[in-house]
Length: 178
Image (tube, rainbow, N blue to C red; front, side, top):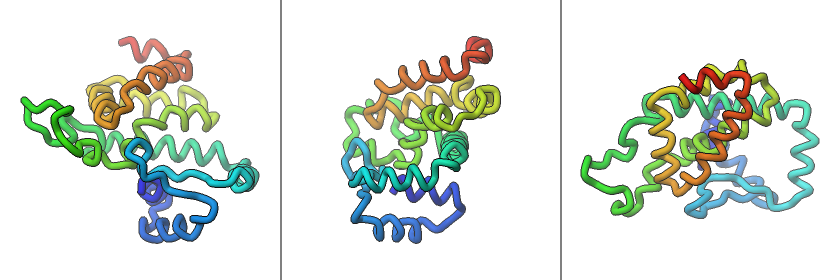
């Protein structure tokens, strides 16, 4: 599951153990297995969500920052965002390949969709995150990021993410225009 893989990277823990913990909480959380949201964990009861929010409120910004950094690290790894991520031939159209979305790891999909939101929620200064974001936005990786969003059916979310980047990095816009 995507959340287990993300947690493993954040805690250097064991995916199997994290999966066991998630399974033990099935009364209050569920893992979304739909094609659109595969691997994401959702809370069944608002009261549990409130409990988590109160329990981790003082650390939430730190957790968001850590997760955002992990998202960017994962996308920048050699097996993260890369040319022809699904290994298709040059003449193959992605729309003609069955099961293509399943070739994108759920944790990479999560990272591509939520890294900017996590940075925004972390409360960090734009300059602190700018260098990490430039690794995605200011080189060829931005095309690979768009490819992942396209394959996963989320390309329409790229514009709001990029707009959020421009807002968040308002003091650093010149870096993105060069």
